[in-house]
Amino acid sequence: MLFTKKRKLQNPHILVAYFSRSGNTRRIAKAICWQTGGTLFEIQPRTPYPPSYEETVAKAREEIQRGYLPALKERAGGMKPYKTVFIGSPNWWGTLAPPAAAFLAEHGLAGRIVVPFCTYGGSGIEELCGTVARLCPQARVLSAFEAYGPKAKTGAVKRQTGKWLRRIGMIR
Image (cartoon, rainbow, N blue to C red; front, side, top):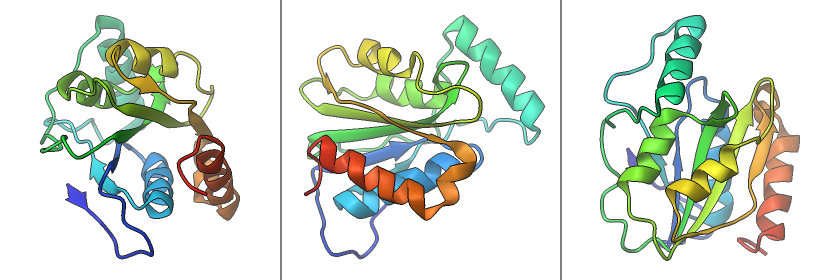
């Protein structure tokens, strides 16, 4: 679902696309969207993951091992105006969650700036940036942001997100 919130600045050239199972990645995506003025897009698989954490982990592990990219509920639509695409995902088994990978595979991001961010529970960024670069070979992939999932609820992570956005030149 695409939407923008009223905020001080609006940047029609930035898309913040994310997949979130528990809400942690969603909070980071909203903080990025608020600070950059971008448009928020939630990536949703056509068939939702099971409600049980254990079942989701097992299904995700199998999908990643097979290289499976699930069908998505909807596409982001007109990608032409977006020069920068932030892509957010929980770190599942050291890489992007399959719905986020499917989003990158489906949308032509050649010539754009792609900026990964993730939340994690056990391990950090690991292979996530390499996966993004592999799925977007003709895009410029910037340095990623990572946050420990439970801390995504704190003001400190929002401040860290702002510092990261300044460091990579997305805000002043």
